[in-house]
Image (cartoon, rainbow, N blue to C red; front, side, top):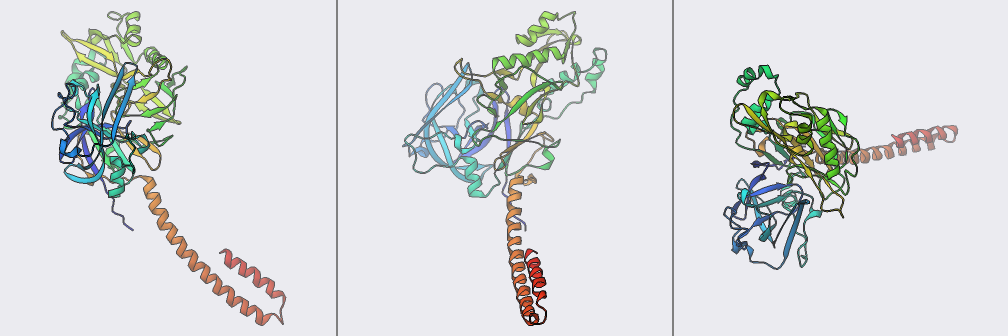
Amino acid sequence: MTVARWTAHLDLQGSPMCHYHVTVTVGSTPMNLVFDLGSANTAVISDLCDSANCTFIQKPYLPAPALVDRQHRVNATYLGNIHMRASWAGYVTTQLVSFQNQTQALARVDAIAQNSAFFVPRCSHNQGILGLAYAALQTVASPPMKAAQSTVIDAIQQQRGAANVFALQLCPKPEYDPRFRRLYHMLQQPALTRARSMSSVGKAQPCRRRGHFWLGGYPAYSVGSPVVWVPLLRSRYYEVQVDHFLVNNHIVTGMTDLNSPRTIVDSGAKNIMLSPENLQLLLHALWKSKMIQFDRRSVSEEYERSFWLDHAMLTLPMDHVTIVTNASVAVSLSGHQVQIPFENLLVVRPAQNSFVNISWTGLTKSGHGSGHLASTILGNSLLRGKTVVFDRDGYQVGFAEAALCCEGSSAQDVDVFPSTSDVDLDSREQTMTIVVVATFGATLALIIAAKLFEYAKKLSPQRKPSAHTLQNETTDVNKT
């Protein structure tokens, strides 16, 4: 039995600094929406947002005629770390949402009328967010609405029959940053052979996208390694359980409260965020691992310590620093190791006279003050270079190495579907088969039993013991 499966695809653009976004048409307005796993609200800038902290955002905005009903106010606050707080306020609306000019569904879209640090001038192309968390995380309107309105992803699933799964692929850093690629490769080579190694690094074709978003499944060609499946703990955030971090396959000891109050996978966060204490332990382990080796002619032990523990940027001759080729950083999630690409944790830039600037990145402190326990957030420092599959019905998330990320894709390329949907479909078919077989079997058994009973009655005056034998045979038929 062949079942038609509905799928969709969008290219991801943007940058780690300004987040990754997709272009979605809201009503008739195309808008760049940040791909956000840590929110269930889809919210866009509207014509009502006309203050100075809105006008730098590129147009078009959601037009005022689309905001006739302003009865239900809504607001949201985002706490990234102890130094960052962003918020917006606006109104609940219902809009037609389209991907690549193809109508998808009617869904709740919040129109932003005010914001505080939610939009930032350096990322003026971002016009809102596409919230992909579970609906339980969606902000409640005031006054509450009589009937709950579906999130974008739930509306598409309900109205289009899409499987409740999506996949996010973020291209590896070297694929879209050729300068970093050449420098990183060079610093992995022995100092004496670096001049030759630079010439051996071919020029990569420009990558026209930063990744892909597939809804309803994912293409088999998009994964370059087996998918590592990790269970989700709750249907709000994409919450996982961290066991420990590893540096060069050694567990980082001493970390506490890694999952207090929770650990989430969130593409709306640029970095891996840890409590200050756990971050220092991870940085100390990175320092002691000698994954980056400095020449003592340029970098003393004290400066090397400062590089890791004080986040110092060093400027030194290119042949005085080496990145160990087999360096590995990983996180263990519910007993499954997921690699953190080491290139995501480094900034390497050329300086004058064959010098290089080097520092670490991708790790930061979380927490919102001494009165609160810190969350661990697994942001794009983990996700970049991976294809990540979110099986929402199966309450699991799968991690694999990204493949063919710079290549174009479409909804028709999706050929791997969530196991849960397949299981549900198969179970329905199997249930029907079992019912038919069981009904036929029961009918056949009754007919045989009746015939045997008639035969037993005929024989009973002459051979009474046979009745017991026939009863056992009847029982065996019924068991079968």
